[in-house]
Length: 221
Image (cartoon, rainbow, N blue to C red; front, side):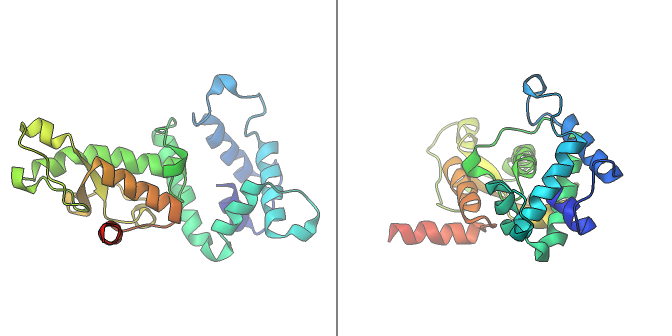
C-alpha cells in the first residue's frame, strides 16, 4: 500500500500529507499485528513517510538512503509498469481491512503475490461457497478436478469432507468483486487445493487448474 501511495504521487510525501495520515490510520486500525505487542509509534505517519523514502531508495539506489530487502522485493515485484494493477490490489486490501480488520492467518509459503490480506479474503470466499458447490454435485460428481480422486463408499457427509472449493478466476481479476458465482469455482480434494495454493505462491503468479492438472499428470509419467 505504501508503494501504491508512492507511485500515485510520483515521489515521497511527508508525514503531514493527508494521504500519509489516512494510510497510517488504516494500518493502525487493522489487527494484522496484535495491538498489545505494538510500540506506540507503530505505523504512525512518521513511519509511513519513512517507508516511502525507503521504497524510493529501492527504486533509485543512487540516492544514498537505505532500503530493506523487503522494500527491494516489493519494487521488483511491482515495478512502475504494474502501478495500475498494484493500485487495484491496494484498494482491495483497504476494503478488506475495513470489513474485517483481523484477516485469517495464512502460512507464509501459501501467500499469493497479492499479499496476506487478499489471500485470506480468497480463502474466506472459498469456504463460504463450498457448501453451494457441493449441493450442486451428485454423489458421482464428487471428484477432484485435478487428480480425479473419488472418495470411497461412505456417507455423503464423510465423502464431502475430502473436498474444498477453489476459484478458477485469478485473484488479480477477482479483486474488487462483491460476489462470486458457483460457476467460477471448482471442486478439489484437500491435497490438490493446497498443492495449487503452494504452486501459486512459489511461482508468484496465478496457476490455473488446467496447468496444475498437467503438472500432476506429467509427474506420474
